[in-house]
Amino acid sequence: MNWNIEGFVETIDGITTPLQPIVDNTVYAPVQASALAPAGYAALPNAALPMEVTGSRELVGYNVFRDGEMIGSTEETTYTDDDQDALEVNGTYCYTVTAVYEDCESPMSAEACVTLVDAPVIGIGALSIYPNPANSSVNIEVTNDISHMVVYNYLGS
Image (tube, rainbow, N blue to C red; front, side):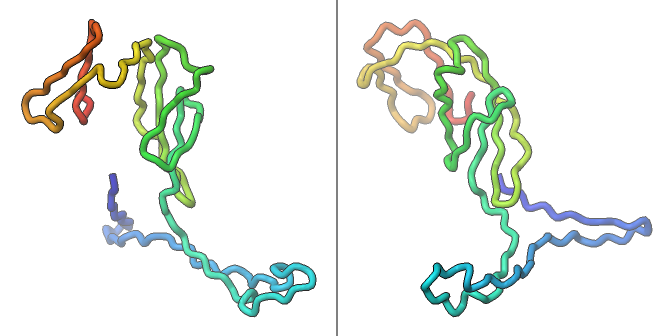
């Protein structure tokens, strides 16, 4: 989600003033041309110009945590926890995620807990679900002996 939030500061007298975003307009010291050019080579003429840097909150990726311990990071919106040494069948694991920006990291997301179960792998062609997308009913055909099936919609219900 993307939220645009405007903050205000109010004095004791009741006068309100909107908060202004903080921007880093620091101009750093000039880069020494001799430091950029290897021995025996001439430096580029613009190498001694000051470099202006502005603050940015560009999204870099996500950090993924299992039971409070960071287990990985990704630039994608999906992550597969395939650490076979740490995961056990019938174990319950709780995950949280933080968004990582160029200059900061978000608070942890809400916790999502899952229990790892041992489920047989269904071969290609052994399962057919149609129509997709569906409005009111879905047909599910299987060629294997399946005793239990759980179906979720895209909202997780």
